[in-house]
Amino acid sequence: MDLDLAQVRAFVRAAEELHFGRAAGTLAISQQALSKRIARLESLLGTQLFQRGGNGILLTEAGQRFLRPARQTLAVAEAAVAEAIGTDRPLRVDVWGHLYAPMRTLAQVAGPAGDLELGHGRDLPAVTTALLHGDIDAAFGRVHPPLHAGLAHRLVRLEPVDAVLSTGHPLAAEPALRPDQLRGSVLWVPGALDRLDFLHQFADRFGIQDRAASINLGLVHFLTEVAGDPRRFSLLPADVPLPEIPGLSSVPLLDPTPLYAWSLLWRTGNGHPGLGGLTAACATEARRSRWLEYDPTRDWLPEPPANRLPAAPGTNAIEHTAP
Image 1: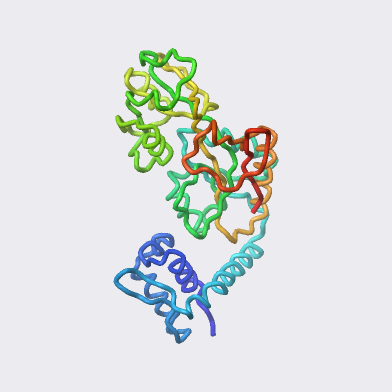
Image 2 (image 1 turned 90 degrees about the vertical axis):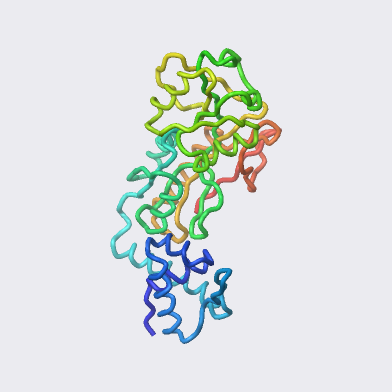
């Protein structure tokens, strides 16, 4: 019996999503095409792999038994392809969240990490699709749930966030601000807020009711809009260099300090040797620069990390391990 890997991959994605439409989307094929692949696989195996109903799909007992070896089959096939084409090609890494300048962090580990081929993704959904298709090996940006079952990630850096305001804003001269002091201001965001998870959660957590969206034409244009209205503010990681824009002020946020979480993301089963080197370089720099310190009594994270290791008294260092 010769298995068609496209059919096996369709089955695995459907089993992970438990939804034919979502599974088809991750494979960039139509739902009809995915359904046909699974039907042909079931015909070849002589058994039904899914129970189909009005409320979705569920794995049958045969489907549950088939899932683990099916995943193993795909992993072995990918390893065979990697051996055939060689592993000396650069590790392909995309970044996203460009307004927050993700290259600042990658630049500090790019040398020790080995040969990298860097690119730009539009956002987390676009990067997820590229990873699942094998177009890239890894990605770097802010990861937030829900995350596709075929992907894994490791936290790399927790970066304090400052408020940026017009110098005409009533709070612009303060040495530091609590996030809730911004409640009477307008949160200026570079796009639809429901697609900007960090800013959305910040606004909800600290009661920022007034929100307005701009078009993301780059950092200079965005901050020029902030500087032009004394009611507006936005957020930037503290280490992002501010362009020389008249009328712009940056103020640290304290009690609590919001932290922006940068993560490395990859597809499970990716055997490129450069992936281990990149995660190891990130871990080394994180220890050296204390990137992963987190104190829940002092700091705010939208999703507090589950894995923590003891660090300095009163702080936690977030665990970072290689894949």
